Amino acid sequence: MQRTLPASAAQLPALIENRLPAFRPSPVIIAAALILAAVLLPLVYLALRAAGAGAAGLEYLLSARTLAVVGSSLALAGAVVVSSVFIGLPFAWLTARADLPFRRFWLVAGSLPLVIPSYIGALAYIAAFGPRGLLAQALAPLGVESLPPLYGFFGAWLAITLFTYPYIVLPVRAALLNTDPALEEAARSLGLRGWAVFRRVTLPQLRPALAAGALLSALYTLSDFGAVALMRYDAFTRVIYTQYTSSFDRSRAAILAVMLVLVTIGLLVFSRRLASSQRNHRIGAGAARRLRPVALGHWQLPALVFCAVLVAVGTFVPVGVLASWVIGRETGAVDWAPALVNTVGASGLAALTVALAALPLAWLGARSASRSGRWMSELSYLGNGLPGLVVALALVFFMANALPALYQTLPVLILGYAARFLPLSVGATRSALTQINPRLEEAGRCLGLRPWQVMARITTPLAKTGILSGGALVFLSAMKELPTTLLLAPTGFETFATRIWTAHQEVNFAQIGVPALLLVAVSALSLVLILKQEA
Image 1 (cartoon, rainbow, N blue to C red):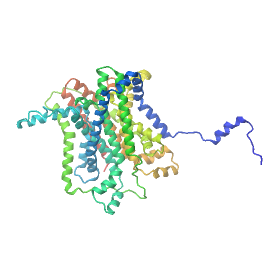
Image 2: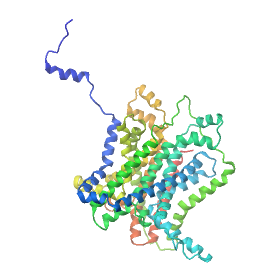
Image 3: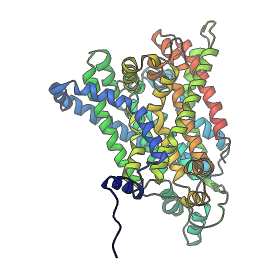
Protein backbone atom coordinates (compact mmCIF):
# COMPACT_ATOMS: atom_id res chain seq x y z
CA MET A 1 0.00 0.00 0.00
CA GLN A 2 1.47 3.31 -1.05
CA ARG A 3 1.75 5.95 1.67
CA THR A 4 0.55 9.48 1.01
CA LEU A 5 3.32 12.03 1.27
CA PRO A 6 2.86 15.76 1.90
CA ALA A 7 2.32 17.76 -1.26
CA SER A 8 5.12 20.14 -0.37
CA ALA A 9 7.94 20.30 2.14
CA ALA A 10 6.52 23.69 3.15
CA GLN A 11 3.61 21.85 4.79
CA LEU A 12 5.86 19.94 7.21
CA PRO A 13 6.15 22.71 9.86
CA ALA A 14 2.36 23.02 9.98
CA LEU A 15 1.96 19.26 10.35
CA ILE A 16 4.56 19.10 13.12
CA GLU A 17 2.94 22.03 14.90
CA ASN A 18 -0.42 20.24 14.80
CA ARG A 19 1.03 17.01 16.16
CA LEU A 20 3.30 18.46 18.91
CA PRO A 21 1.49 20.44 21.63
CA ALA A 22 3.02 23.80 22.41
CA PHE A 23 4.69 24.21 25.78
CA ARG A 24 2.39 26.15 28.09
CA PRO A 25 3.80 26.89 31.52
CA SER A 26 1.41 26.54 34.44
CA PRO A 27 -0.27 29.77 35.60
CA VAL A 28 1.03 28.97 39.08
CA ILE A 29 4.61 28.84 37.80
CA ILE A 30 4.17 32.07 35.83
CA ALA A 31 2.75 33.84 38.89
CA ALA A 32 5.53 32.48 41.13
CA ALA A 33 8.21 33.55 38.63
CA LEU A 34 6.84 37.10 38.45
CA ILE A 35 6.67 37.34 42.24
CA LEU A 36 10.23 36.08 42.61
CA ALA A 37 11.47 38.54 39.98
CA ALA A 38 9.97 41.39 42.01
CA VAL A 39 11.12 40.38 45.49
CA LEU A 40 14.63 39.36 44.43
CA LEU A 41 15.49 42.75 42.88
CA PRO A 42 17.84 43.55 45.81
CA LEU A 43 20.00 40.58 44.86
CA VAL A 44 20.64 42.13 41.45
CA TYR A 45 21.90 45.28 43.16
CA LEU A 46 24.12 43.27 45.49
CA ALA A 47 25.62 41.32 42.59
CA LEU A 48 26.43 44.54 40.73
CA ARG A 49 28.03 46.18 43.76
CA ALA A 50 30.02 43.09 44.75
CA ALA A 51 31.25 42.50 41.20
CA GLY A 52 32.56 46.06 41.07
CA ALA A 53 34.97 45.35 43.94
CA GLY A 54 37.21 43.11 41.80
CA ALA A 55 40.25 41.38 43.29
CA ALA A 56 40.19 43.57 46.40
CA GLY A 57 36.67 42.36 47.09
CA LEU A 58 37.73 38.72 46.82
CA GLU A 59 40.59 39.34 49.23
CA TYR A 60 38.20 40.95 51.70
CA LEU A 61 35.76 38.05 51.30
CA LEU A 62 38.43 35.52 52.34
CA SER A 63 39.92 37.63 55.11
CA ALA A 64 39.99 36.47 58.73
CA ARG A 65 37.73 39.37 59.70
CA THR A 66 34.98 38.25 57.31
CA LEU A 67 35.25 34.62 58.39
CA ALA A 68 34.99 35.71 62.03
CA VAL A 69 31.80 37.60 61.24
CA VAL A 70 30.39 34.49 59.56
CA GLY A 71 31.26 32.34 62.57
CA SER A 72 29.79 34.73 65.13
CA SER A 73 26.59 35.14 63.10
CA LEU A 74 26.11 31.38 62.67
CA ALA A 75 26.78 30.77 66.37
CA LEU A 76 24.15 33.33 67.35
CA ALA A 77 21.60 31.98 64.84
CA GLY A 78 22.13 28.39 65.98
CA ALA A 79 21.76 29.27 69.66
CA VAL A 80 18.62 31.31 69.00
CA VAL A 81 16.99 28.53 66.94
CA VAL A 82 17.64 25.86 69.60
CA SER A 83 16.33 28.00 72.46
CA SER A 84 13.34 29.21 70.41
CA VAL A 85 12.31 25.62 69.64
CA PHE A 86 12.65 24.57 73.27
CA ILE A 87 10.45 27.51 74.29
CA GLY A 88 8.03 27.71 71.36
CA LEU A 89 7.15 24.01 70.96
CA PRO A 90 5.78 23.45 74.50
CA PHE A 91 4.12 26.87 74.48
CA ALA A 92 2.37 26.09 71.18
CA TRP A 93 1.21 22.69 72.46
CA LEU A 94 -0.08 24.13 75.73
CA THR A 95 -2.09 26.86 73.97
CA ALA A 96 -3.45 24.53 71.24
CA ARG A 97 -3.96 21.08 72.76
CA ALA A 98 -4.02 21.31 76.55
CA ASP A 99 -6.70 22.37 79.02
CA LEU A 100 -4.55 25.30 80.09
CA PRO A 101 -6.57 27.97 81.94
CA PHE A 102 -6.79 31.29 80.05
CA ARG A 103 -4.93 29.82 77.12
CA ARG A 104 -6.19 32.53 74.73
CA PHE A 105 -4.68 35.17 77.02
CA TRP A 106 -1.37 33.29 77.19
CA LEU A 107 -1.35 32.93 73.40
CA VAL A 108 -1.87 36.64 72.71
CA ALA A 109 0.42 37.83 75.50
CA GLY A 110 3.10 35.35 74.50
CA SER A 111 2.96 36.44 70.85
CA LEU A 112 3.34 40.15 71.57
CA PRO A 113 7.19 40.09 71.39
CA LEU A 114 6.68 39.81 67.62
CA VAL A 115 5.61 43.45 67.49
CA ILE A 116 8.23 44.96 69.78
CA PRO A 117 11.01 46.44 67.61
CA SER A 118 14.31 44.75 68.33
CA TYR A 119 16.12 47.94 69.20
CA ILE A 120 13.34 49.02 71.56
CA GLY A 121 13.26 45.59 73.19
CA ALA A 122 17.04 45.58 73.58
CA LEU A 123 16.92 49.06 75.13
CA ALA A 124 14.25 47.84 77.54
CA TYR A 125 16.30 44.80 78.58
CA ILE A 126 19.39 46.95 79.09
CA ALA A 127 17.32 49.35 81.19
CA ALA A 128 15.87 46.45 83.20
CA PHE A 129 18.75 43.98 83.52
CA GLY A 130 21.82 46.10 82.76
CA PRO A 131 24.65 46.74 85.23
CA ARG A 132 22.74 49.65 86.80
CA GLY A 133 19.26 48.86 85.55
CA LEU A 134 15.98 48.54 87.37
CA LEU A 135 16.80 45.09 88.74
CA ALA A 136 20.14 46.31 90.11
CA GLN A 137 18.35 49.23 91.78
CA ALA A 138 15.83 46.86 93.34
CA LEU A 139 18.66 44.68 94.71
CA ALA A 140 20.67 47.64 96.01
CA PRO A 141 19.27 47.33 99.58
CA LEU A 142 20.68 43.78 99.63
CA GLY A 143 24.16 45.07 98.90
CA VAL A 144 24.18 44.49 95.15
CA GLU A 145 25.88 47.48 93.57
CA SER A 146 25.71 46.36 89.93
CA LEU A 147 24.90 43.35 87.75
CA PRO A 148 27.13 41.67 85.14
CA PRO A 149 27.12 43.41 81.75
CA LEU A 150 24.39 42.31 79.39
CA TYR A 151 26.33 43.09 76.23
CA GLY A 152 27.90 40.66 73.79
CA PHE A 153 26.72 37.20 72.79
CA PHE A 154 24.54 36.56 75.85
CA GLY A 155 22.61 39.79 75.57
CA ALA A 156 22.01 39.39 71.84
CA TRP A 157 20.98 35.74 72.30
CA LEU A 158 18.56 36.56 75.14
CA ALA A 159 16.90 39.49 73.36
CA ILE A 160 16.54 37.82 69.95
CA THR A 161 15.30 34.54 71.44
CA LEU A 162 12.51 36.38 73.24
CA PHE A 163 11.64 38.13 69.96
CA THR A 164 11.69 35.04 67.73
CA TYR A 165 10.14 32.16 69.67
CA PRO A 166 6.65 33.23 68.41
CA TYR A 167 7.90 32.33 64.92
CA ILE A 168 7.91 28.75 66.20
CA VAL A 169 4.64 29.09 68.09
CA LEU A 170 2.32 30.28 65.30
CA PRO A 171 3.08 27.70 62.56
CA VAL A 172 3.39 24.83 65.07
CA ARG A 173 0.12 25.79 66.72
CA ALA A 174 -1.59 25.94 63.32
CA ALA A 175 -0.27 22.45 62.55
CA LEU A 176 -1.44 21.14 65.91
CA LEU A 177 -4.94 22.50 65.33
CA ASN A 178 -5.13 20.73 61.96
CA THR A 179 -3.88 17.36 63.24
CA ASP A 180 -6.26 14.44 62.81
CA PRO A 181 -7.05 13.06 66.32
CA ALA A 182 -7.58 9.58 64.85
CA LEU A 183 -3.81 9.16 64.50
CA GLU A 184 -3.15 9.72 68.19
CA GLU A 185 -6.15 7.58 69.15
CA ALA A 186 -4.82 4.75 66.99
CA ALA A 187 -1.44 5.03 68.72
CA ARG A 188 -3.05 4.85 72.15
CA SER A 189 -5.09 1.85 71.10
CA LEU A 190 -1.79 0.14 70.23
CA GLY A 191 -0.52 0.66 73.77
CA LEU A 192 1.38 3.97 73.53
CA ARG A 193 0.88 6.49 76.28
CA GLY A 194 1.58 10.17 76.96
CA TRP A 195 5.07 11.17 75.87
CA ALA A 196 5.42 8.16 73.54
CA VAL A 197 2.35 9.28 71.55
CA PHE A 198 3.72 12.80 71.22
CA ARG A 199 7.23 11.67 70.26
CA ARG A 200 6.24 8.98 67.75
CA VAL A 201 3.01 10.35 66.28
CA THR A 202 2.48 14.07 66.95
CA LEU A 203 6.06 15.35 66.67
CA PRO A 204 6.74 13.83 63.21
CA GLN A 205 3.63 15.63 61.89
CA LEU A 206 5.02 18.92 63.19
CA ARG A 207 8.30 18.60 61.30
CA PRO A 208 7.32 20.91 58.38
CA ALA A 209 6.00 23.56 60.78
CA LEU A 210 9.07 23.27 63.01
CA ALA A 211 11.36 23.51 59.99
CA ALA A 212 9.51 26.59 58.72
CA GLY A 213 9.55 28.26 62.14
CA ALA A 214 13.19 27.43 62.79
CA LEU A 215 14.15 28.79 59.38
CA LEU A 216 12.28 32.03 60.04
CA SER A 217 13.93 32.32 63.45
CA ALA A 218 17.38 31.81 61.94
CA LEU A 219 16.72 34.30 59.13
CA TYR A 220 15.41 36.86 61.62
CA THR A 221 18.58 36.46 63.69
CA LEU A 222 20.84 36.89 60.67
CA SER A 223 18.95 39.95 59.40
CA ASP A 224 18.29 41.73 62.72
CA PHE A 225 20.20 44.92 63.33
CA GLY A 226 18.75 46.62 66.40
CA ALA A 227 19.48 44.00 69.05
CA VAL A 228 23.01 43.12 67.89
CA ALA A 229 23.92 46.80 67.50
CA LEU A 230 22.75 47.78 70.98
CA MET A 231 24.25 44.63 72.51
CA ARG A 232 27.54 45.40 70.70
CA TYR A 233 27.81 42.00 69.06
CA ASP A 234 29.60 41.83 65.71
CA ALA A 235 27.13 39.94 63.55
CA PHE A 236 26.56 40.43 59.82
CA THR A 237 24.14 43.33 60.12
CA ARG A 238 26.23 45.42 62.49
CA VAL A 239 29.34 45.08 60.33
CA ILE A 240 27.35 45.82 57.14
CA TYR A 241 25.88 48.94 58.75
CA THR A 242 29.37 50.06 59.78
CA GLN A 243 30.61 49.62 56.22
CA TYR A 244 27.67 51.64 54.88
CA THR A 245 27.88 54.52 57.36
CA SER A 246 31.38 54.77 58.82
CA SER A 247 33.72 53.71 56.04
CA PHE A 248 31.34 54.58 53.19
CA ASP A 249 32.56 51.44 51.39
CA ARG A 250 29.40 50.08 49.80
CA SER A 251 31.30 47.46 47.80
CA ARG A 252 32.52 45.76 50.97
CA ALA A 253 29.06 46.00 52.47
CA ALA A 254 27.65 44.36 49.34
CA ILE A 255 30.25 41.59 49.62
CA LEU A 256 29.19 40.91 53.21
CA ALA A 257 25.55 40.92 52.11
CA VAL A 258 26.35 38.40 49.35
CA MET A 259 28.03 36.21 51.97
CA LEU A 260 24.86 36.55 54.03
CA VAL A 261 22.86 35.36 51.01
CA LEU A 262 25.13 32.33 50.69
CA VAL A 263 24.58 31.50 54.34
CA THR A 264 20.85 31.85 53.77
CA ILE A 265 20.99 29.44 50.83
CA GLY A 266 22.77 26.95 53.07
CA LEU A 267 19.99 27.27 55.63
CA LEU A 268 17.40 26.74 52.90
CA VAL A 269 19.09 23.52 51.79
CA PHE A 270 19.26 22.23 55.36
CA SER A 271 15.62 23.16 56.03
CA ARG A 272 14.53 21.49 52.80
CA ARG A 273 16.25 18.23 53.78
CA LEU A 274 14.69 18.39 57.22
CA ALA A 275 11.15 18.78 55.89
CA SER A 276 11.44 16.86 52.60
CA SER A 277 8.68 14.50 51.53
CA GLN A 278 6.63 15.21 54.64
CA ARG A 279 2.86 14.87 54.22
CA ASN A 280 0.42 15.10 57.10
CA HIS A 281 -2.95 14.86 55.36
CA ARG A 282 -5.52 12.19 56.12
CA ILE A 283 -5.51 9.23 53.74
CA GLY A 284 -8.82 7.68 54.67
CA ALA A 285 -12.43 8.61 54.05
CA GLY A 286 -14.64 10.50 56.47
CA ALA A 287 -14.56 13.85 58.18
CA ALA A 288 -11.91 14.74 60.73
CA ARG A 289 -13.19 15.20 64.28
CA ARG A 290 -12.54 18.11 66.57
CA LEU A 291 -9.51 17.84 68.84
CA ARG A 292 -10.20 17.28 72.51
CA PRO A 293 -8.04 19.20 75.02
CA VAL A 294 -5.53 17.04 76.84
CA ALA A 295 -5.95 17.07 80.62
CA LEU A 296 -2.77 18.35 82.27
CA GLY A 297 -3.64 17.05 85.70
CA HIS A 298 -0.85 17.69 88.21
CA TRP A 299 1.21 19.31 85.39
CA GLN A 300 -1.20 22.23 85.20
CA LEU A 301 0.62 24.32 87.82
CA PRO A 302 4.10 23.90 86.23
CA ALA A 303 2.55 24.75 82.86
CA LEU A 304 1.06 27.95 84.27
CA VAL A 305 4.40 28.88 85.86
CA PHE A 306 6.18 28.29 82.54
CA CYS A 307 3.73 30.49 80.63
CA ALA A 308 3.76 33.16 83.34
CA VAL A 309 7.57 33.43 83.40
CA LEU A 310 7.77 33.50 79.61
CA VAL A 311 5.12 36.20 79.26
CA ALA A 312 6.58 38.22 82.15
CA VAL A 313 10.11 38.31 80.69
CA GLY A 314 9.14 38.47 77.01
CA THR A 315 6.21 40.91 77.21
CA PHE A 316 5.63 42.51 80.60
CA VAL A 317 9.25 43.60 81.21
CA PRO A 318 9.57 45.54 77.91
CA VAL A 319 6.05 46.97 78.26
CA GLY A 320 6.73 47.91 81.89
CA VAL A 321 9.94 49.71 80.97
CA LEU A 322 8.14 51.57 78.17
CA ALA A 323 5.38 52.57 80.59
CA SER A 324 7.97 53.85 83.07
CA TRP A 325 9.34 56.10 80.33
CA VAL A 326 5.88 57.65 79.92
CA ILE A 327 4.56 57.87 83.47
CA GLY A 328 5.63 61.07 85.17
CA ARG A 329 7.20 62.52 82.01
CA GLU A 330 5.97 65.39 79.89
CA THR A 331 4.99 64.02 76.46
CA GLY A 332 3.61 67.25 75.03
CA ALA A 333 0.63 67.66 72.74
CA VAL A 334 1.30 65.17 69.95
CA ASP A 335 -1.28 63.91 67.47
CA TRP A 336 -0.64 60.17 67.06
CA ALA A 337 -3.63 59.51 64.78
CA PRO A 338 -1.80 59.99 61.42
CA ALA A 339 1.01 57.65 62.47
CA LEU A 340 -1.56 55.10 63.67
CA VAL A 341 -3.46 55.21 60.37
CA ASN A 342 -0.28 54.98 58.31
CA THR A 343 1.10 52.10 60.38
CA VAL A 344 -2.04 49.98 60.32
CA GLY A 345 -2.85 50.82 56.70
CA ALA A 346 0.57 50.05 55.26
CA SER A 347 0.98 46.91 57.37
CA GLY A 348 -2.50 45.64 56.48
CA LEU A 349 -1.93 46.24 52.76
CA ALA A 350 1.43 44.48 53.00
CA ALA A 351 -0.13 41.49 54.81
CA LEU A 352 -2.86 41.14 52.17
CA THR A 353 -0.42 41.49 49.27
CA VAL A 354 2.09 39.04 50.71
CA ALA A 355 -0.59 36.49 51.65
CA LEU A 356 -1.81 36.43 48.03
CA ALA A 357 1.73 36.33 46.66
CA ALA A 358 2.66 33.45 48.98
CA LEU A 359 -0.07 31.12 47.69
CA PRO A 360 1.58 30.05 44.39
CA LEU A 361 5.02 29.78 45.99
CA ALA A 362 3.74 27.74 48.93
CA TRP A 363 1.74 25.53 46.55
CA LEU A 364 4.87 24.81 44.52
CA GLY A 365 6.79 23.94 47.68
CA ALA A 366 4.10 21.54 48.89
CA ARG A 367 2.73 20.10 45.62
CA SER A 368 5.28 20.48 42.82
CA ALA A 369 6.82 17.22 41.62
CA SER A 370 9.76 19.00 39.95
CA ARG A 371 12.89 20.29 41.63
CA SER A 372 12.58 23.61 39.83
CA GLY A 373 9.14 24.21 41.29
CA ARG A 374 10.26 23.41 44.81
CA TRP A 375 13.35 25.58 44.46
CA MET A 376 11.21 28.51 43.34
CA SER A 377 9.46 28.21 46.68
CA GLU A 378 12.76 28.01 48.55
CA LEU A 379 14.24 31.02 46.74
CA SER A 380 11.50 33.23 48.16
CA TYR A 381 13.26 32.95 51.54
CA LEU A 382 16.35 34.79 50.33
CA GLY A 383 14.90 38.27 50.86
CA ASN A 384 14.28 37.62 54.55
CA GLY A 385 17.96 36.82 55.00
CA LEU A 386 18.93 40.32 53.91
CA PRO A 387 18.99 43.19 56.39
CA GLY A 388 16.22 45.73 55.89
CA LEU A 389 18.89 48.37 55.27
CA VAL A 390 20.31 46.42 52.32
CA VAL A 391 16.87 45.73 50.82
CA ALA A 392 15.86 49.37 51.13
CA LEU A 393 19.08 50.73 49.61
CA ALA A 394 18.88 48.23 46.76
CA LEU A 395 15.33 49.32 45.92
CA VAL A 396 16.31 52.98 46.18
CA PHE A 397 19.14 52.35 43.70
CA PHE A 398 16.88 50.45 41.30
CA MET A 399 13.94 52.85 41.44
CA ALA A 400 16.08 55.97 41.17
CA ASN A 401 17.79 54.63 38.02
CA ALA A 402 15.09 52.53 36.34
CA LEU A 403 11.68 53.77 37.56
CA PRO A 404 12.11 57.26 39.05
CA ALA A 405 8.35 57.91 38.89
CA LEU A 406 7.82 55.19 41.53
CA TYR A 407 10.57 56.40 43.85
CA GLN A 408 9.27 56.98 47.40
CA THR A 409 5.73 55.81 46.70
CA LEU A 410 3.52 53.45 48.67
CA PRO A 411 3.79 50.55 46.13
CA VAL A 412 7.59 50.59 46.51
CA LEU A 413 7.23 50.49 50.30
CA ILE A 414 4.90 47.49 49.99
CA LEU A 415 7.43 45.86 47.65
CA GLY A 416 10.12 46.38 50.26
CA TYR A 417 7.93 44.77 52.91
CA ALA A 418 7.18 41.88 50.55
CA ALA A 419 10.88 41.29 49.83
CA ARG A 420 11.58 41.14 53.56
CA PHE A 421 8.58 39.25 54.87
CA LEU A 422 7.34 36.98 52.08
CA PRO A 423 8.92 33.91 53.76
CA LEU A 424 6.79 34.46 56.86
CA SER A 425 3.65 33.81 54.83
CA VAL A 426 5.15 31.15 52.55
CA GLY A 427 6.31 29.05 55.51
CA ALA A 428 2.99 29.08 57.35
CA THR A 429 0.93 28.54 54.18
CA ARG A 430 3.17 25.72 52.99
CA SER A 431 2.88 23.99 56.36
CA ALA A 432 -0.93 24.15 56.09
CA LEU A 433 -0.88 22.80 52.52
CA THR A 434 1.03 19.69 53.61
CA GLN A 435 -1.98 18.78 55.74
CA ILE A 436 -4.45 18.87 52.82
CA ASN A 437 -5.05 15.61 50.99
CA PRO A 438 -4.16 16.14 47.29
CA ARG A 439 -7.10 13.92 46.35
CA LEU A 440 -9.46 16.73 47.28
CA GLU A 441 -7.81 18.99 44.69
CA GLU A 442 -7.77 16.17 42.14
CA ALA A 443 -11.51 15.66 42.71
CA GLY A 444 -12.11 19.34 42.00
CA ARG A 445 -10.20 19.12 38.72
CA CYS A 446 -12.14 15.99 37.76
CA LEU A 447 -15.36 17.94 38.27
CA GLY A 448 -14.23 20.50 35.69
CA LEU A 449 -12.73 23.20 37.88
CA ARG A 450 -9.82 25.16 36.49
CA PRO A 451 -6.57 25.31 38.50
CA TRP A 452 -7.31 28.79 39.81
CA GLN A 453 -10.81 27.68 40.79
CA VAL A 454 -9.38 24.70 42.67
CA MET A 455 -7.03 27.09 44.47
CA ALA A 456 -9.84 29.53 45.34
CA ARG A 457 -12.63 27.08 46.22
CA ILE A 458 -10.78 24.11 47.72
CA THR A 459 -7.14 24.77 48.63
CA THR A 460 -7.43 28.25 50.12
CA PRO A 461 -10.40 27.53 52.46
CA LEU A 462 -8.73 24.36 53.77
CA ALA A 463 -5.43 26.19 54.33
CA LYS A 464 -7.13 29.18 55.96
CA THR A 465 -5.48 28.70 59.35
CA GLY A 466 -1.96 28.72 57.92
CA ILE A 467 -2.71 31.63 55.58
CA LEU A 468 -4.03 33.73 58.46
CA SER A 469 -1.04 32.81 60.63
CA GLY A 470 1.31 33.90 57.86
CA GLY A 471 -0.65 37.10 57.31
CA ALA A 472 -0.48 37.84 61.03
CA LEU A 473 3.31 37.43 60.98
CA VAL A 474 3.63 39.80 58.02
CA PHE A 475 1.30 42.37 59.55
CA LEU A 476 3.09 42.38 62.89
CA SER A 477 6.56 42.43 61.29
CA ALA A 478 5.71 45.28 58.91
CA MET A 479 4.41 47.39 61.79
CA LYS A 480 7.80 47.43 63.49
CA GLU A 481 10.06 47.50 60.39
CA LEU A 482 12.34 50.52 60.56
CA PRO A 483 15.09 50.67 57.86
CA THR A 484 12.74 49.79 54.99
CA THR A 485 10.17 52.34 56.15
CA LEU A 486 12.71 55.11 56.67
CA LEU A 487 14.18 54.84 53.16
CA LEU A 488 11.17 53.81 51.05
CA ALA A 489 8.17 55.54 52.62
CA PRO A 490 6.67 58.54 50.78
CA THR A 491 7.72 61.97 51.96
CA GLY A 492 5.88 62.89 55.15
CA PHE A 493 4.61 59.31 55.63
CA GLU A 494 5.23 58.72 59.35
CA THR A 495 4.65 55.42 61.12
CA PHE A 496 5.16 54.38 64.72
CA ALA A 497 8.56 52.93 63.80
CA THR A 498 9.82 56.20 62.29
CA ARG A 499 8.40 58.22 65.18
CA ILE A 500 10.21 55.94 67.65
CA TRP A 501 13.47 56.27 65.71
CA THR A 502 13.24 60.06 65.69
CA ALA A 503 12.61 60.12 69.44
CA HIS A 504 15.51 57.71 70.00
CA GLN A 505 17.84 60.02 68.05
CA GLU A 506 16.69 62.89 70.27
CA VAL A 507 17.00 60.76 73.47
CA ASN A 508 13.36 61.54 74.24
CA PHE A 509 12.21 58.46 76.17
CA ALA A 510 8.68 59.78 76.64
CA GLN A 511 8.27 60.01 72.87
CA ILE A 512 9.60 56.45 72.55
CA GLY A 513 7.22 55.02 75.12
CA VAL A 514 3.97 56.43 73.74
CA PRO A 515 4.18 55.10 70.14
CA ALA A 516 5.74 51.84 71.32
CA LEU A 517 2.86 51.22 73.74
CA LEU A 518 0.35 52.12 71.04
CA LEU A 519 2.12 49.68 68.73
CA VAL A 520 1.77 46.90 71.29
CA ALA A 521 -1.91 47.75 71.88
CA VAL A 522 -2.79 47.71 68.17
CA SER A 523 -0.87 44.49 67.68
CA ALA A 524 -2.60 42.84 70.63
CA LEU A 525 -5.97 43.73 69.11
CA SER A 526 -4.92 42.34 65.74
CA LEU A 527 -3.80 39.09 67.32
CA VAL A 528 -7.10 38.70 69.13
CA LEU A 529 -9.04 39.23 65.89
CA ILE A 530 -6.81 36.93 63.84
CA LEU A 531 -6.73 34.10 66.40
CA LYS A 532 -10.43 34.37 67.26
CA GLN A 533 -11.34 31.74 64.67
CA GLU A 534 -8.96 29.19 66.24
CA ALA A 535 -9.95 26.72 68.91
